[in-house]
Amino acid sequence: MKDFRFWELALNPSLVAALGAMASSQVFKFIRSIVRDGRVDLKRISDYGSFPSSHSAFAVAGAVAIGINQGFKSAAFALAVIAAAIFIYDILRLRPTIAQSKRELDRLIERNGLERLEDAPQFEAHSQTEVIAGIVWGILCAVLVSLLWP
Image 1 (cartoon, rainbow, N blue to C red):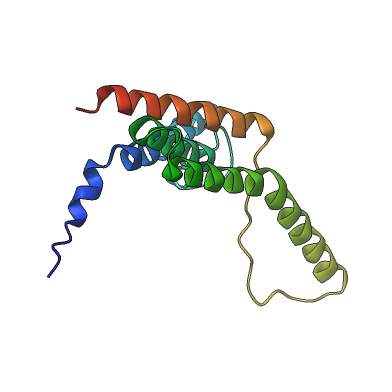
Image 2 (cartoon, rainbow, N blue to C red):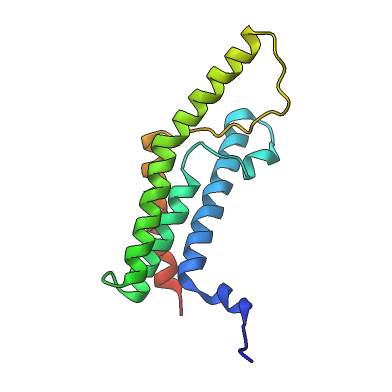
């Protein structure tokens, strides 16, 4: 029987870089909201949107760390870049369309005196600046983890 040691995931530098980039982006958003709003809002730890894009940071950090650790010519790096590109495309192009559709649907429901059965979650779209900041942060996190990894 094969011995699956799932705890070894914690020793994967590419995964550590990606999760570190995402977690630190979310912590930055949380601290920024405290400074900006003058109050603690724990919801900001897991909120979508805002500066920097933690999804962009996550995807790019993983891809760059794979490139550093396995080579930039590896199939794993190519696949990670493809996945990161899809995430970033979604963040920049699809989310705004979804948000606009939700606003229009809400307007139609209100105009016709109807009631929603269930409120759909609202995903805040990122600006290009927020995505670029996430990309830069992801690269920095991947390089930092790769330099510090034993």
